[in-house]
Length: 260
Image (cartoon, rainbow, N blue to C red):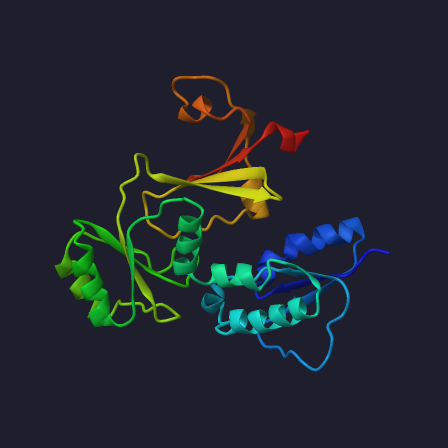
């Protein structure tokens, strides 16, 4: 008998395609929308598989305390030995860039010089201590690139921090980080499942830092062709799979194995 799947989330837009696919496969599932909920610690959770899709940007959708509620739920599930995907440890990383950087460093992956600060005076002090010609501020807990701003002087930062446009991080912690100029204005986001590469999305960064590409059905209506070797195509130097132009600033890269 197939175990029931419990989907823990706070954003219905992100589960539409998931639920559609589960219906197509005939798999039993239950929607656990976690914005306002309760967890009875005296009870045992149901048997099944629990899949968390909690996001650090939940507060931007009016779900300020959804991650805290989800954390309580996940700890409860783990205590009872339930099978949980994206459990409490994953959520802890999701809502803290500081923890993400420390985890990357622990694995030997370098990250930009960063100082965490709480309070406007400390933000300014951190930037002074950084001593970089250009630096960025970002929210420790955010998502979608929210709160990321580039500064080229202390005067500009002081004007922003003490001005009407200042946006404090939802957890009170602002990160001051050295700015590293990329050779080309784009990011490449790679997705892996079980250690296996599934796809990559390349997004143009020339117009700002809010870089959360949404692969909606409409954006998938585009022409696709196999990338061929050409001096005019920079991607062809390293990519031999399928390249799809999702939008004016977003490309999708699929390996050949995904299509077979």
